[in-house]
Image (cartoon, rainbow, N blue to C red; front, side, top):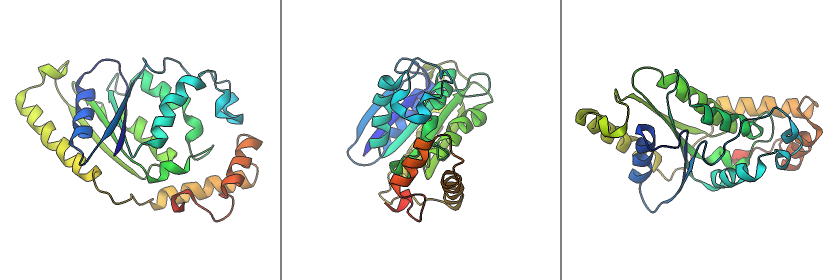
Length: 232
């Protein structure tokens, strides 16, 4: 299994360690790649909209491409973020902004409709739900059909300070999630995704997309007709 972890922080704290536990507990042989934000993509979206005509036009394309090529080749995606001010970290939000052309409304990738993902967030107290939603929402619009989530209030400032009882719970929970993700069965694309994709196809077909190149992209894929990425 090819696994890519994208961490919304440079340090190896609680969220990082939980993400690693899930990756390591999955069954079979594993090829694991990790990226740390902002270390591996230290930019904010400039709002220049050049990417709407082609991803290669993004000023940060060379750095972004390294991450996204790994993402496209992965079987399992693991996103981790600490909860900062009740939301995902700023570097993680920046990453979401910089990859918005992967959303169904623009130029979705067929490979995303067969992937599994898990989103992990930790907090000292509250806020993991909203932090997780930032990322899981983006993954849905990428087309990822199976998205598991795990948020926990660790009541500690670092991994080493988490109480033994809490760590035992994390060990048990991560084993359960990893088992669920280890299934060789291809995840099923749900009705909501199918419906949303159909709406986006209709928009592109009627010229309501963001650029002529987007419509051409959809046309080349055959998605303006009956062809769908999850059937490829």
